[in-house]
Structure formats: structure tokens, C-alpha cells
Amino acid sequence: WIIRRARPPSVWLTSAMRESLHAPAVRYPYGRSLVVARTLVVLALAGMACLSVWLLSHGRQPDLAMRAWGGAVAWVLGTAAAWRFWHRLPEGFLVWDGSLWWLETGRTGIRMPVDRSPRVHLDFQTILMLSVQGASHTRQWLWMECRSDPLQWPALRRAVYSRARGGPLAGAPAKQTTDGMPPPQGGGASHKT
Image 1 (cartoon, rainbow, N blue to C red):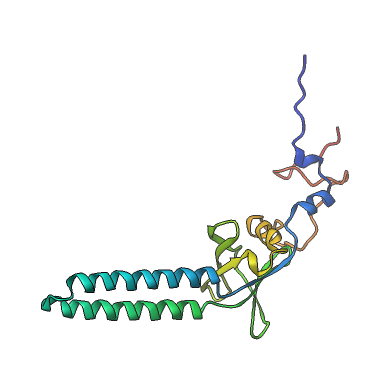
Image 2 (image 1 turned 90 degrees about the horizontal axis):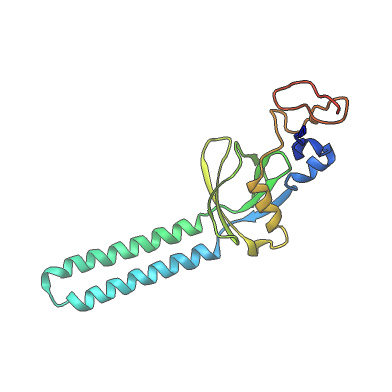
């Protein structure tokens, strides 16, 4: 008995079927996250509660009064830094056109290309924390939430986790052989069977 090895599924796919496997184009808003704001408020309140307990339990000791004031100043500065961080989160749109990523600023609407695909740092299914690196090689942190555009959320997730359409010229059509199939890996000739 001769057992014939079946062709891998990728050989069976037509170019139209391959195209449908890629993530669709998507334009998704990013900006100040309510989840981040709530988390920072909870942390600030927890810090205030810890500081209050510390002051109430050790506040009568004169040598700790200076430390208590130092703790209060540290809490105020930390809370102010957290508010500034949240307030300065960038706003705009992350755009995937099917082959390239773009950042579209919210105020001016200018599109800036992104050097690489967004990098996922946190994925909680309804929240993504991404970083992107623009042409200036500066990293921007983006908080993406499902609630911003629930209908586009699945498309965004597919785009973030998919690879760009191959090759140096992503927009160029794939090279086809005479039988309509892409050439096999390694550049060898295609044979009909």
C-alpha cells in the first residue's frame, strides 16, 4: 500500500479565499479610558485611606509628624501625577487599512504611519493596552475599550492579532503560477497533480 501524503490546506485555498482570511480594514477610536480613570481613583483613595490610618495610629508621636506631612505631600504629588497621566493620554483613531497601520490624531485628523504592528501588552478581552511606534520612533500607549465601538471591536482584535499581508510591497498582488496557485515555499516550481 502506498499512502499518499495530502497537500496542506494552504494549497487548496484560492487567492480569493486567502484574501478573506486577512483582517478587515478597521478604524477604531482610542483615548482616555474610563477603566484607567477608575483604577487611578481607586488607587488614590486607597492611598488616602492608608495615610489616614497611619496618621490616626501614629499621629500623636511628635517625631512622626514630619513623616506624616511627607506622606501627605507624596500622596498629593502622586495623585496629581496620575491625573496628569490620564489627562494627557492621546486621543484619535487607530486605523488598519488592510496592509498598514496608521494613527489618526483626534484634533487635526492627520494620519501618521506606524512603523510596526501594534504590540499587545494587556488583553482583557474587552480592553486592550497597545503600544505603537511611529515614524519618529517614539512609543505611544493606547488604551482600547470595547465600549468605544462594540460593532468594530471584533475587527480590531482580528487586525491586531493578524499579520500584515506579506512581502515588502504589501499592496502588490501575490505572484501566481499558471494553475492559479501561489508558488510553494522556497520558490520551487508548481506542479499540477
